[in-house]
Figure 1: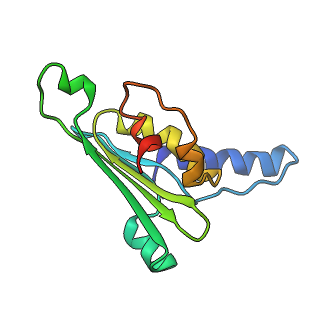
Figure 2 (figure 1 turned 90 degrees about the vertical axis):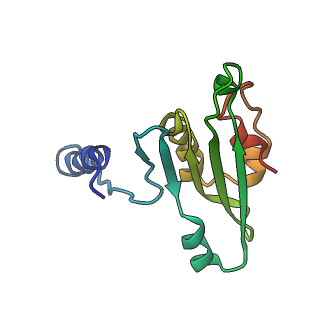
Length: 141
């Protein structure tokens, strides 16, 4: 994966292994990525198609499309779209995707949860920050 943070992590893993006396390998699972366009797009984990290929019909997808408060108050029409992809057999969130303002910043936090194996129930039990676009990831039902 040709991303600067991946290369940095690979270098650190090599340095730790060779010079730090602690063998470490680089994990390539659930690496978040973003496209810094207007609006931003960011993703972590599996796409819906990848999840369906791996888990078949045991995939539940949660979607949300809304206009954030930042754009609602001044009357702008910019929308935000979010998607959570869940393996219903384990309830694990296996993918998260967002298009909208601050998508990269928001997905970075979600990536930690996905990497740690968070479940949809974990997301549901999390209190969101209101009003924020990020809270949508913990209020999707």
